[in-house]
Image (cartoon, rainbow, N blue to C red; front, top):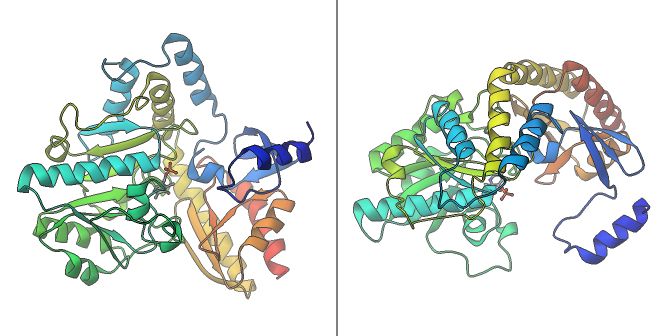
Length: 396
Ligand SMILES: *Cc1c(COP(=O)(O)O)cnc(C)c1O
């Protein structure tokens, strides 16, 4: 089929929940993808921070191939070795003691919301169910997570939303403190707001959130779905801030493209879930867990975190050089390999021009160009991306 025929069928048969770019991607390898016309792109979207080891990383491919022939799926009514091995690795490398597995970010956050309510219910009785989340946050598209998301543009048309959510400005400790009542069971936030425009809070913010949560006896829930699994240069973003949260959610990069969600917590909090409290048919199945284990082992053993810190710093340095010569760049924000450039014009024209020249990036919040490339990229890849971006931006 020709590209035009494929796109026509896509528009005919698939609900238009996405405004898609007019290309069909057919193959990927490392930081590169190819479309149906054979055109090559440097991929600084990486499935939106999903393919962190690059497309078709050989160790993940091998692990999936091996596992699919042994055991693809059995019910969580039974124990399974890949799930146990992955859970052990993940717990040994994090603050948490216990994990719950599901299939997406929204589901992981749903599980976190349920656990926070159940924990409060078990420990303080009824009536303590309210969660505080941040303005401009993003937590997913299910009814509970779209309610948790502090952006009305995602909520219009879906009323009535879930009861028991309150929003406060991000990176504002007194607003958070003032919003807590005897109904509050926890606060849920992203350590860095991804969809909200790559917003990085003050260095002390997360430790102050921790202090307030301890003072008021409420849970600190971090949504690390976008920034976890090495994206910021440490395995988890909370490590930068020297805090221990109570619950963390993960998804995007966990399986390097295999759909997986994780909700993990301390023993104390996790004990509020008992058999029957929560479940997922597919969650943590052997195939998913084999992909996750290969991904985590590669991140920990193949110098990935070091590469993120080194190449991330180099990328930001190159962007600052560009900023000095450009009139449209207002701000550059980043940590490791999640980087945003705030510009003074509509971002989509930049995104489209980059795509024409063979660089995939995307735009959040209208005017923030976001870069979430594979964590395996080289300085040479950065140079190639900066050359294209520079051409496009200097044109404006
Ligand atoms: C992507 C994302 C989600 C939602 O994940 P899905 O897998 O699309 O449900 C939630 N929170 C954050 C911070 C995200 O970046």
